[in-house]
Length: 78
Image (cartoon, rainbow, N blue to C red; front, top):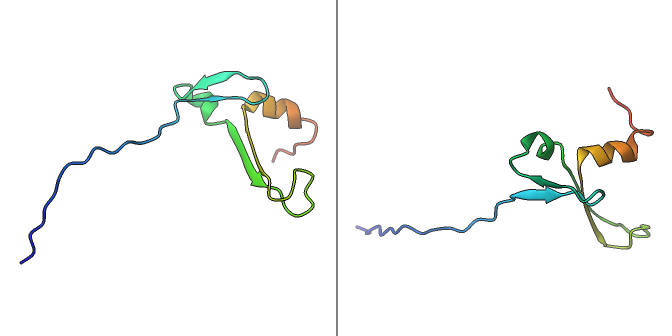
C-alpha cells in the first residue's frame, strides 16, 4: 500500500490592483469595477513588414473615455 503524504503550502499569486491609462495617465483602482471592466488592453505582435516593426510586441492600456475619443469618428455601433 502506498502512503499519501500531504502538507499545506502557501502559494503566492500576482493580483492586479489597479490600471493606468497610457493616454491620459489616469489611475483606476480595481475597486472601480465600472471603469475597470471597460478598460481595454491591446497586445499584438507586428508581422513581416509591419509599421510597428517585425516581431515587435505592442502593448497599450486605454480607458474607455480615451478609446472613445480616439475612435468615435470611425466606430460602428450595432
